Amino acid sequence: MSSVLYDAQGPRAKRRNILFTAVFLVALAALLWWVYKALDEKGQLDWAKWQMFFTSGEPWSTYIWPGLQNTLKAAALAMVIALPLGAVLGIARLSDHAWVRVPVSVVVEFFRSIPVLVLMIFGLALFAEYTNVSTDDRPLYAVITGLVLYNASVLAEIVRAGILALPKGQAEGAMAIGLRKGQSMRLILLPQAVTAMLPAIVSQLVVILKDTALGGAVLTFPELLASANTMSAYYGANVIASYTVIAVIYIALNFALTSFASWLERRLRRGKKSTGAVLKADDAGIPGTSATGAGGANA
Image (cartoon, rainbow, N blue to C red):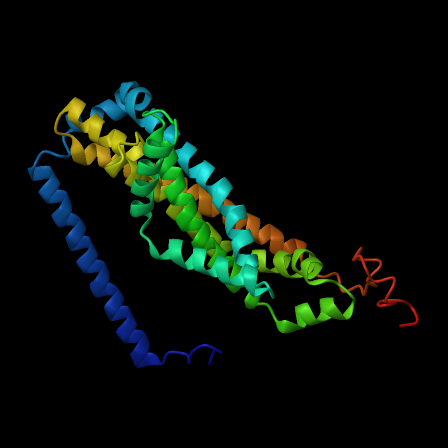
C-alpha cells in the first residue's frame, strides 16, 4: 500500500531498516556503557557527590531555588513583552503602507541578525551609561532587553509567515462581506493563523527560557545555570552532579511548556471544528455587513 508521502516499504527495505535499528541500539548501548564506566572510574557516581540533593534542603533553598526564580522571572517578562511586540511587528510588515512596512522590516531584520548575547551586553552598557538602574538590577534588565529585541523579531517573522500561509480566499471572502483590512486581520486571519503558528511560537518560547543562561555566563546574572557553578564550588568537585540536576530541571520546564502548548493547540483545533450549520454573516456577529446586504436572506 502506498502513501501520499512515500511508497510502502518492501521486504528488503524492512529487513534493512530492522538491521540499521539493531546496529544503532547496540552502538547506543555501548556508548552509554562507556560513559557510565568513565564516570564510575573517576568517582563521579559516588553517593557522596549526589547525597546532598536527596538528603539536604540546603542546595535547593540556597542555590537552586533562587536561581530558578531568577530564570523564570527573566523568561516570563521577556515572553510577556516579546509575544505582543512580535505580533505587532509581524502584522506591520504586511501593511499596505510603505512608510509602515519598510521601517518595521528594517528593525526586524536588524535585530534578528544580531546574536542575542551581543544585545544583552549592549543593554548592560546602555543601562549603566544612561539610566539610574542599580548595579544589582542591571543584569536582569540587560537579559530581558536582549531576549525581547531578538525574539520579538523572530516572532514577527513567524507571525508574518503564518498569516501569509493562509489561503487567499480567507482575505478575499472577508473583503467580499465588507470587512476592512484591520477587521479581516483581527477577526478572520489572525485567529486562524495562531493555531498553525503555535508550534513555532512555543519553540521560540523554549529558546527564550534557555537563553537566560547567557546572562549568567557573561553578565553575572544569578540564574539557574549560574547557581550550579557556585553550588559545585561550595560543595567541592561535584560539577557533573550539579549540572545533571540543573539539566533535569531545564528538561522538566521545557517539557511542561511544550505539553501545555500541545494541550492548547488541541483545544483550539477542537473549538474551530464546524458543526456543519450554515450561518449568515449577521448571525456570526461580523460587523459592517448590514449596509452591504451581504449574508442577507435575499442576497
